[in-house]
Length: 139
Ligand code: GDP
Ligand code: MG
Image (cartoon, rainbow, N blue to C red; front, side):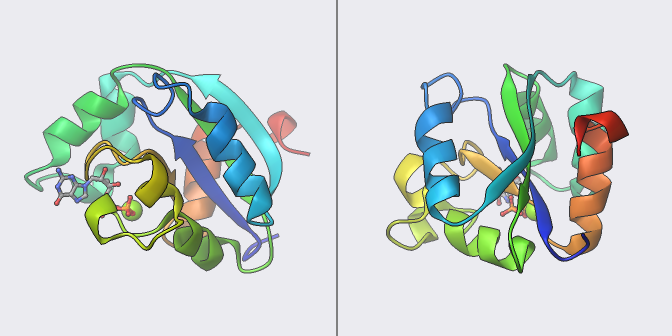
């Protein structure tokens, strides 16, 4: 399965703005199949653990406050070349730099409040899937 899955989070803000349905529709239209799905909320220390690679960066505290501020939707997505294709579908981190038609261009409010997460490598996809989902939650 390595190489064919990625992990996404519909971030706080997008969930609050009732964008779960529209974003999942874009994900399906992009050719991704949902393999696991949950609605949950992170504690601050869980958001810090999830984003540990960014510890020490100027945006880390705001990012982890934001990610633990209200509920999120998390999904494992399957498609050939999933990681790279999904990052193409969501667009640049900063919505101002994202291509037209990408999920962040359409739905993001700002660089921190940028609507969705997408794994940056196959190794991250595995680590992030293990972080959120137990074995019986993926089949
Ligand atoms: P991603 O892989 O495109 O999500 O970007 P990164 O892994 O570099 O950063 C993780 C998240 O931190 C991003 O999705 C943004 O929400 C936030 N972020 C990254 N860089 C910046 C920045 O320079 N300023 C602010 N305010 N937020 C940032
Ligand atoms: Mg990243």
